[in-house]
Image 1 (cartoon, helix red, strand yellow):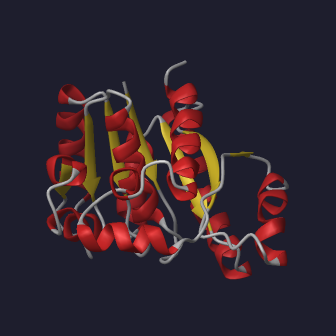
Image 2 (cartoon, helix red, strand yellow):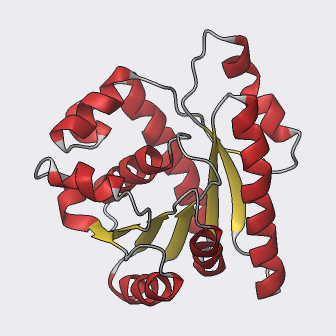
Length: 215
């Protein structure tokens, strides 16, 4: 049905956390999901290996820095799954560029730091270049406020800062201890703490994405 790339030019903005927990939400919604871990640190594969949860059945590791393998594996996964999620590396623009050339939707997470906003502009440039190469309106581009501390001025103002960059902003994901605890046990937040505030945030985000890719 769709390929979704979670992309960024900076580490630490929550790409893997978002990709993994979205995969869990989409599985709970009845979709067959493939989650491609293209980050050479293979954080998603390590997370999945901690337990026997949803991620253990859907995470696939991609060889370090190999855009050709990513393309081949994504096309193969597309034939078997309803949704293919790609977690991209921060320091390998050629891999991220390949993911964006494949994607129907690009999710660009951004944390509240000014440095995160600077890096977001680079990720946005890569996504717009992919559109130009494809001669298409794909990938659709959406910003995801990430690792938000809502009690801070930076956290409260992030959505407005992103809107001023001219792309639509999806529901935000807060920084919460429960997310780290879930990873430690190999679970998504929906498995570890169903109905929790953190789970509700990911549920809202997944619903918003579902509306986009189901059009």
